[in-house]
Image 1 (spheres, helix red, strand yellow):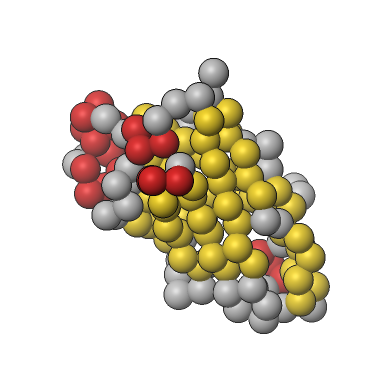
Image 2 (cartoon, one colour):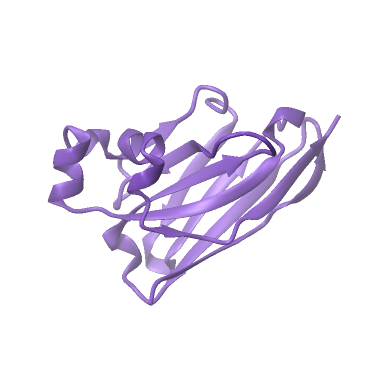
Length: 139
């Protein structure tokens, strides 16, 4: 059974930094495209940043571009989200997500290069979710 576990959330002042981590167990990490989603109270869950199985392609939402960096360490089965210059509007529950990265996903994404964008924009495509970690940014 695949389990997804996030760590690293917390309370930080505006302008500060946090790094989120996510590990998968029960399956081969590099079989999956991975992503970070967030959900603030009263809002829909949104894709923040996503990455393909090898780490060669990434996607960032406009709201975090230039401030957040997604990366993965396949040798250690870990996904990261480095969040810099945090703003109060970044406050949300952050979720790690996994989607099997195979030729079918590439086809549905319109090509392998588009997998991260597709995963971040298609919440229903996510097969496995973590339990979430809270990020709170104070002004």
